[in-house]
Amino acid sequence: MSDVEKGGLISKMIRPKKRWRAYKTRSRQLPENYRTAVEAIERYLMHFVPTDGDSNAAMFEDLADLFEQAAANGTPIREIAGKDPAEFVEAIAQNYSEGGYVRARARGNS
Image (tube, rainbow, N blue to C red; front, side, top):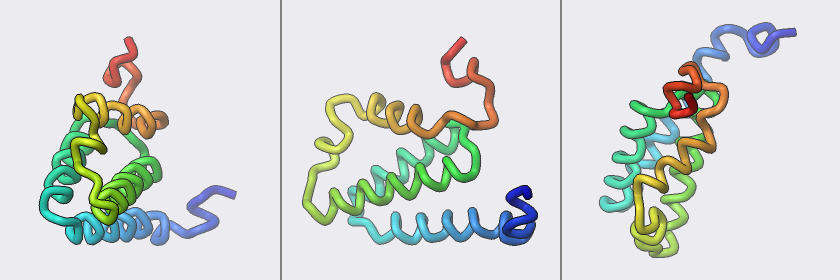
């Protein structure tokens, strides 16, 4: 039985939107500097990281978890991202890009 048959077509379409809205609500509640960092990472990931719907939702939920915990603990953003923020974002991207809709060549794997 397919996922559509199990959960129904409407459920299959609505669930990702609910997850996205919940993520956006969480990210808006972060302190300004953490929110700004999350928004920048989000923009990069949305434009340059191919993922399927479930990986995409999980990636952003995990990002929100990380920054919520860091904000609660008072962890500086520099400590989260390390010395090279681009490397930090690429590490996130690599964890969630398998199964995406863009060929491996576009991900840098000629």
